[in-house]
Image 1 (cartoon, one colour):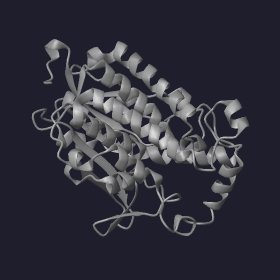
Image 2 (image 1 turned 90 degrees about the horizontal axis):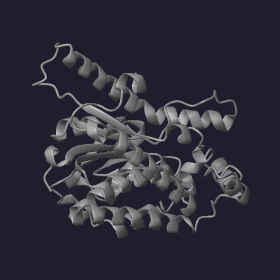
Image 3 (image 1 turned 120 degrees about the vertical axis):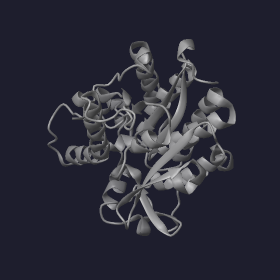
Image 4 (image 1 turned 180 degrees about the vertical axis):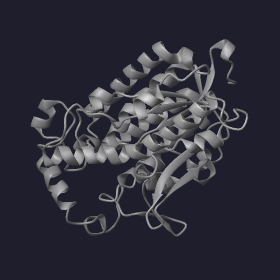
Length: 343
């Protein structure tokens, strides 16, 4: 299908944040947008769980359009939950009663959390087992994905030794590139690709916006955020402080990039830069800031199916609200005030 604004069809870029199991929120957003059918995706950038969603989404679109993409995302998250069911790290009955998705009262999580503070994955997981590798290979045919023409895919990882961002493009992406983008260093050994070693892309770009600026034609970028920028109270316990450090570090690169975009946009609007040479972006955002601010870091490791479904439904609701309020802004103006949200 070709985008035609007169028919109510618009082409857009999508940027997907990482955040472990909270990526099921992104799944819900994407599911509703694909179901709606009025947005054609030009490019996708993703990091960590966002990279997983991005790769599955791009593969599904290449295989059979939005219906196949929805089916592939559903299969990916079902398989992820099924694989996690064999882990001893499960929410306790008290965690389930609280209903906040966390595992703070789980004995297995407490042991895991303690061990990872003293031992590396090279000691705890010497065979470098990663169940997500099997899930990805079962859901995605990477030969089909690498040949995809209609959607441009950009996945972000962090080069451990060089301290630089690495963006894998469509023709380079296999399961190792996706796993590199989602390689949390306290869980998994660094992923080696072509002699370089990579950790989670969230340390350098969560998600990266610049590949969408230079690598696609669309000027509209929809950011699906799952890490809260603001929280209601100052953290006081050790666990709350660590949770906040986690969200701050994984938001920092996006905040810097959006400040730069806001600065360039202002210069274009003031006539200081030639709009023929600089791309003026229209920024949109879908998030569940208030809900995500209530969640602890342990909920990012909880792949219980009921929890994933709760996040998916939240994502669908937020996507529906955005479509109702802001679909008319696509192709016309930003629906997100960059200065208010990011500056």
